[in-house]
Length: 378
Image (cartoon, rainbow, N blue to C red; front, side):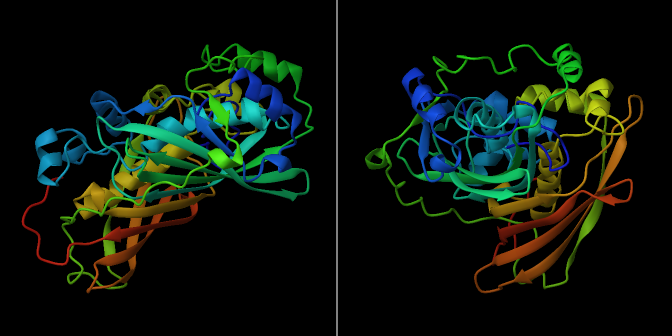
């Protein structure tokens, strides 16, 4: 999913792959507004690898054992490692690059900002999953020189049951002249293979195929969720209960690692020159890295990553990271509401860096155990 609201995201963020050659011709003739409500399907499925899950969990400091040890995942009732709550951003980074590069061609990929990210979980993504990807441009709203674009990505399993729905809102500017000096400078630091070139998506196996209305099918009913085994129980917390505060260091090495693991190589996350060109004081952390760290903080308290039902963030700040010293991100949380009968609870989360808020809003809807825990894995 794209980068944070104040970050310029050249060719990263979310929505998966490209268009068939004939689809590109058709879609580029349409305006962005004419594509609202149209569905695209990624040509190939996404195979979720066990080692990719472990790699991503390490990158976002998601230390729960179910992301790393199959025996623990089995104790929670799953046949493979559980992916981190924000793992879908790996798929999303490639998707947005394709969507902007080959479908919403009115916009320049260097003028894209992310404002909101929502994940709705039907079940965790698991190692061994073969995921289908459906993409729809839900809404485009104009405000001044900017368009607010809402994109929904639905991941389905081999039985076409929904696994996760990711909804992203980005701000796109069009008709903006790009400084050629800035373009030349950034081209000297950007990762090879991540600059959108004409015709690049024509034969991409992960390309987006525009569906005719009659080809759009509703996903099957989701599978019934498995019971959760959380450390806090619905009877043991109340509205106002505070989560223990936590502090996590973030270094330049963490940013470079996350860029490679997530497929989000925006140079503002590793190049001072690129960061300065877009008005940032220094290199800044990926917004989705910050969201991933927040998810890890929440799961540390829950004790069960499968307990998340929905996780939404509105980005409002960034984490500046200097070359030779870590920047600390501080996390807090509070129970907004809890239903002791059903176990449903809403948690309000906070993240700050150098005293500044990173989110305008961060809310998680979770399921808590309704009986005393029998075991916990952290």
